[in-house]
Length: 498
Image (cartoon, rainbow, N blue to C red; front, side, top):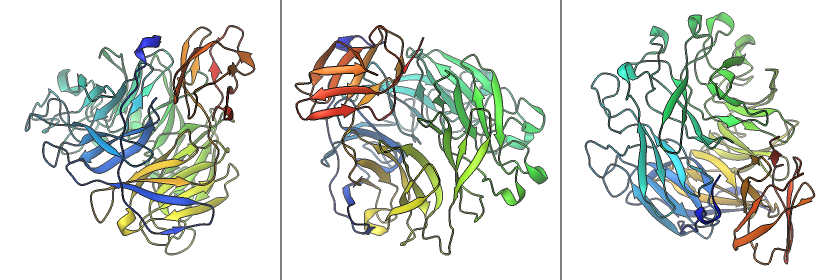
């Protein structure tokens, strides 16, 4: 775990601009910033909140080194944006990587970790003509270190093109997926650019990579191939994810799976999509799952469902799947189509975005109850952006996200629905004695920190960060902080590892 002095305060930033669209009463939507290519273009993946309260993300293109490299940026909740790093300063080689396709994860040492789709030290002219992708670390002040370049092994058995972001597990290592490469080169999962069906990998903070699993290890790729989504670690310690292709559905459809994998690499396919007639259970899952407070997992499919516009589903750890909502319930899809990710908010409901549909055709922000009742909160169009990338709920209670944007290079936005502030723990699980950072707002003067009622000693490092340790005797449950402004509770329970 990180030491107390490893937690450093980061800088700040965001973007300015006004937006217009349809928002219901008691909701406040703001376009905070527009990208202009020099500070990045076409943001990808969800934002992440840092220990300083600011938000961090990536853009696929733009930056100081031309249109193809991409950037890492920081943005304040007030709308000030700073470009921390521009990829590919040594074009055309791009040994530091290029085209990040996903967001960042903040580790327990206070730094951020992520992946790039292309670039890196390995370009063998056969499997990846523009570099095979990288894993990187970047400090809050913008110092980037390339930890690993994919296709470092013969025939790219270590994987090619990490599309998704990373997860830091409770053991301190990072886990992720590559959409191609690996030990199995089956004709059903090859393209004209890369070879192999994708992998699950583990990488240490020092950059030592281990391939845990190569997809298409089963006949007819029944275990799936092309994992485009990242992983989530459940309270049982195992990892859960999806593949965008593969599996054996009805009539030979190969449109994706849900899987469980141990940190030792033992994979179990929990569900194969298109197991119902006409793929009413959905097809092509491409976004990360979320484990809700009830212990079940929730996710989305890009297509399929009763109306063809994608689905939101719930699945148990035993593989029992329930379709909660079918998008595009009416023509021309006023409720949206193509959902791309969920977040369980502090009120117990799920919030997400769709890439198209809505009242203006540019995508939506929606709220969904655990019972499957959907409310469209906002419809995008034009100057406020189109093609939203997903949401993060910050500790001030508001939601933040980005759009790829049709008219321009992308935007950053916020949405307030009246949810109260809370605190968030980093990490979300640990053993007794493990160091934990508590993120929040107005934490100065805090008088008490408890783990499910068990008091903990703590130190206030800043108005947005408290450092503490899991107290002896603590049990899994919510973390509570008492401040002069009131009592703050964690948005999800903290899991105490025996």
